[in-house]
Length: 223
Image (tube, rainbow, N blue to C red):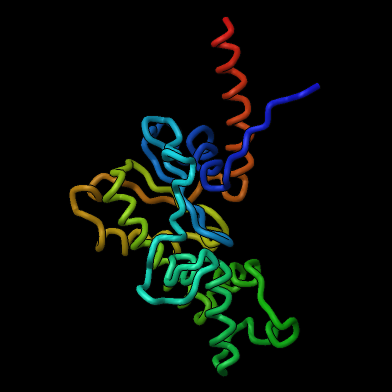
């Protein structure tokens, strides 16, 4: 029997998950920022996903963070993903370790040749000074991007999710303090910036909730 299939990206699904069952319950104007292998934003306006004219909105990772910065996979240079995504963060940490700086990850890198996002999150959670320095640097770049989102969309709430958010409040605090310095004061005055309440489950929950919501809406139209 044929069935309808809907596609949704990680950031939009995360936004819906948090809106229906997480940190964004009863908040109709919010933005969910996912920081993992890439960086993207799921935007809700009036309780509805904003998708843009051609369904390509929310590519926060491909906004410019550094003019003439590192080359990005999209073909541009200096995109936010090149300095603040998990792969970029791992590259920065590995570079410093190979240059002789010390960290709790030094032996792990020497043995395995490469680090993983789980390695980085664990080291940051354990208070590794070098890793935390790089985490804060990445978070500050994200904070600038979040300030731009606040200026453009004036949301009530910004939710930080994805792999980097697993480090905890250190990331959210760095994003919040940077956004406060960079955003238009009136736009920032009443916005909250918080960590995802659902963690890694926000995307799965959002995708499931979307399917249920679409089914209920169809039933409503049919009645």
